[in-house]
Length: 586
Figure 1 (cartoon, rainbow, N blue to C red):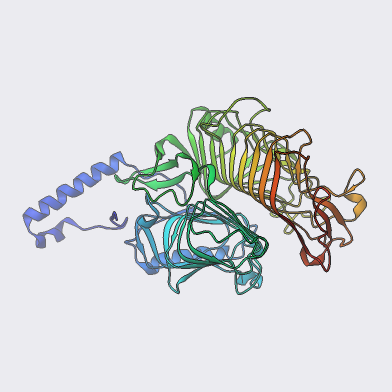
Figure 2 (figure 1 turned 120 degrees about the horizontal axis):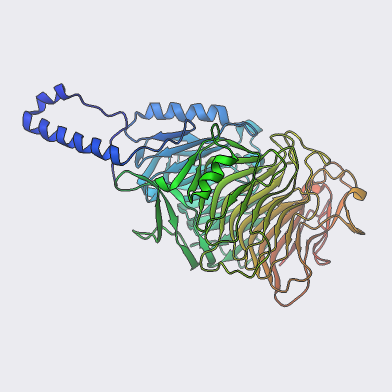
């Protein structure tokens, strides 16, 4: 394990006399070399909302910093504050409680380079142990040794865990209260994960000691020691032995010389288990000086576009970026990495970001938040449908989240539209707000959450909820989805307000009538028509029939019996309704 001197370490020259003149001269020479290195390796300015910790700092000082952030962020669901806490390699004797809009990130080149001896805890005390609103937080690239043997991670959507080594157990709920949807990837859990009352979960490319408990939809893709999926739906475990194609998310790190860089893992095919068991994982290290380090207080669309035009990557430090123009990503292999749930908000009815139809763009760790003035699209990938192949170097979207309403009135016709081929999505939550500010059938107006026109697009962990029309529309050929979670809009005022011609409501997942190849595995689609429980949704999924149109392991649920989903897939499947709240198709 590498060690680093604490940032505050100092020793005055007079005090060296007691060490002897020869040693003093050697020590001073070492100091001079260190100062020379400092000239060559300058500390990036990440701004005040990036907290950098060193293992040499007093544990009580570190704990005070972390507790102060948590006190502010525990229930700060729609506030503007954002934080990223970066841990230099070393051992930390702290227990961390993690609230909203806070990212914990180890700066080692390997998760075990940063060891938290005490643990990480997410509970839902602020919400009466109901974790269904524990969103927008993340942990990446470190090792956790829980002080009581169990890391409690009671979360729902937009709370990913990546490159984590848990030296113990994990628990995914809070004292039996509901939690609703989570994601873990590229992680090693030494002992057992207990999902408790967690409603659904995706585990990808991880290694588990074991897994216990289940509810509606637990999906494992490329997982070593996954539970037995042969008895679905009792328990409802869906197991895909290998991950067909994926690139793990880029991450900020410090190299052996002490310089910051971003490591970009290589594209991998047909994999199982973690990527970091190798001493030298395949990928590319990009020096921090190739990034434009953006700050929300000083940057705008013009400055960010100027940096992109110069060929710079973007590192978005924590905060909310108000955009009156579209961010235009035109260069292949551009990396746009957000820290601390960095947020992009279009304020002039503009598209927040467009990505050209080029190879290898990597977008991760960003929340797109719709402005009050309607945007037709929040994120557009590719200008139009083409035949251009990106199979060798796909565009990747990882931990990319979308919100329409909640923090304030927001309006967006479509949240994300994908025209490019071979795009890989890895943990996307596309959410029309169902609570918070600016919420209402006629207030936060939308049409679709996601539209996919490109071919060979793959999604791992796709969450799309509450939009007015089809939640997801898939027009491209050879699409593949591994885990899908969706809820119909809660606030439908009455049946006549939500009709697709003569059909009751709009399916959550719509595959275009012209599509001949498509597969989706592990799907959970729910309704909770609390505005009017007499509302019905005719079918959770609509798709054309065909040999190569394949759906596996589908579940529909009437949450608390509040409303009805009449069929699961087209006209197949029993009705989910009061008294028979769950319906499944294999």
